[in-house]
Image (cartoon, rainbow, N blue to C red):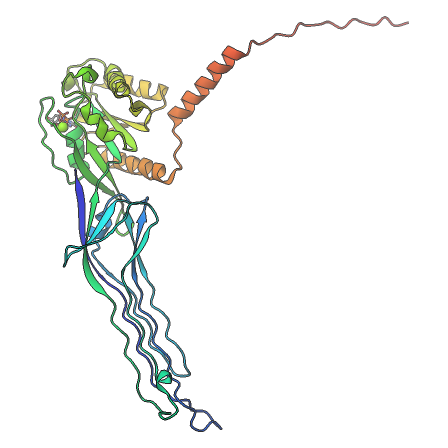
Length: 377
Ligand SMILES: Nc1nc2c(ncn2[C@@H]2O[C@H](COP(=O)(O)OP(=O)(O)OP(=O)(O)O)[C@@H](O)[C@H]2O)c(=O)[nH]1
Ligand SMILES: [Mg+2]
């Protein structure tokens, strides 16, 4: 299991100081104490969110401070409370205290909130210290400092995108291009024996987004009956959101027909039985630097026919990789937000509705009934 980790330092805001003041007004002799209290410091709150999937955003931004409460003022004015800071973490994050090793919280479901560092209390102003025998108190309190701690966040990563395809089509090369993962790459089949995960970041901080890509060992015809490495690794992609299906369009594969390659892999996905073949998919024509134009044209035509987005890349030269990265990111974000409708499923639906109609309705062609001309007169 691949684990994402981040260590962050958080400090809640300190409380504002209480004020020492006396009411001074014309015609009000001995106005009495009027120092207001300091405001509370802002807390540091963690919230689990379904829109985040990795801890990358903490890695580049490891310090978070809550706002300090404002000091109290004269005329019994209380200082404003400091703003809290909300840190969004992906569902599944476990928070540990780095100093003691104790588990602070386990975010198991979305929209859970937890205060991980409390802001300091504001100090009391001198108005609170007045008594019948002590009518001009000069005592007032300072604000309490906010809690400060170092936390370790841990997240078991689930892949958003799985790279599937024949062996040697360049899956590992692609993941090493788009993420920090460094799997073994070699020009013999079944180089990858275990799935590898990589975190892909797109956009600039602080608005970057990230998703997780899994490089799955290659499939071949008959994988469902145990040929090659079999389809045992497909269980890793049951919960991924998108499949990226790589098809080699160079001559190095030794297979003549890329459309057949595509269909064989789809067949193997189907035979796994978890409806993997119906998952949102992006097709990728790989090894564009040594492309066989006929193969590419054939694949383009096929993808157009089945309404599947096709991206053409070379993981070695980097051509088309950036565009693919953003397309995958967008697809993942849309699915996460629940706004993605797959054209292929719409197509399937339309076809099935049409087929149903054709079965149930026998169209009757109305007979043409001629109007008899009335004889006039
Ligand atoms: N010319 C060219 N060669 C590539 C490209 N991408 C990968 N290769 C080569 O293809 C071979 C296989 O690449 P891998 O990334 O190991 O392929 P894989 O799909 O991970 O293969 P398995 O792990 O065996 O399933 C390596 O020799 C790579 O250098 C590309 O875009 N262009
Ligand atoms: Mg590989």
